[in-house]
Image (cartoon, rainbow, N blue to C red; front, side, top):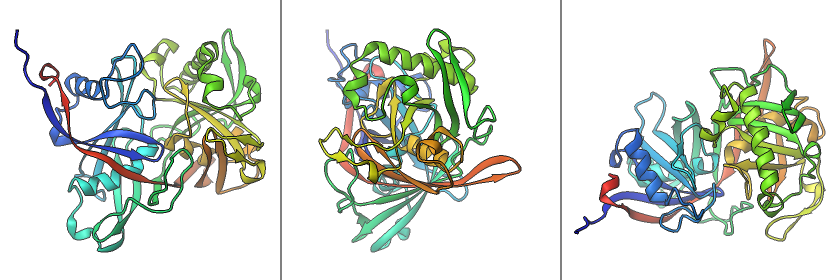
Length: 388
């Protein structure tokens, strides 16, 4: 029996923030549907019952099992359309329900690399503003991409905890990050009582900003907020309990009708827990001092504690911190603030947000943070012919 050769698809492998993903030009993939999902699953090496993604580009974590599809935007006032797929590691699922804030930092640089931005707009030195339409959540992201010698500058001295080497800074603005289809706080409350049968009742801040997120108090879960990945990810009972809480929170937020649907919606909402500042040792061995942060935050992504912080969750943290009375705001000491520095498993991160209350409803005009990005590899990915 003869077997056909593999099919080649142009692709760029990039790091953005504390994530990595495979980037595609939309013209090189089939239209949305099962065939496109099958290609992305095969490229990343999923589903893999061994959980390692050895036969693909994924690196066996939610931070590295990601796909991005870019195209020149036809939307007025935007340069590029950005579609993000969170590829499950052990299941045949590509979740299109949310954005990746970390990879958002790589979208502008990659769009320039792919020729999706008019070359006449690229200065010899300085920066270029790339207006991105985030197609998953119908939001605008503005990236300020540094340019040197007419090319994207990738090297630099900007350090980001969770990333080993310094690189060039890419400032990002998430414009009006709250959900347009509903209130920022879907229940109308900045703090709710979240009842989880068989588990307990928890104070919770349920917010739609950046990405739908459920914030809990670490203490209510029996945690300190200083936990690292091994403390939670090596505890199957804890992960199951946290997933149950997430599922009930998703129902309360109106994202799903029944907890059983949560298994098909792994990317959103995120679950995070907060605590007041405290000294701890990060995953790199660096000591984070209580005096250097406003609060501690730990967040789960695709059922596991994240090694740093998802960019979209950082937007939710900054937004919630700017609104008095949320659990995030209270953990940071309460009061009015337009920026916070929070401690996560890999170190610290600063995020800002501009919030105001209009006609009794909270609105956020933008959230601000900086990331970095660089191309790791470019060329083609290969998949068996029977996939395409």
